[in-house]
Length: 80
Image (cartoon, rainbow, N blue to C red):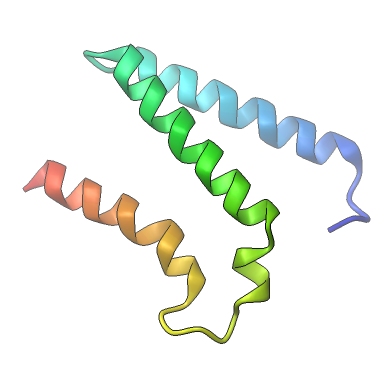
């Protein structure tokens, strides 16, 4: 990962910011959605920077489920 050019991270960051902005703008309550998405991304960034997702690979349940399960559960509850 350290051998990637720096523009990869910059483009990814800008794409993420643009996606959050457009998603929040498309909702009825953009401030709430922006706050929730920004908080979620910040939490995931802090957790991943600590090495949690690639250091604890042998745990049960796998650490990656902690990143995806809350999102999937929220989507299912919103559509139910």
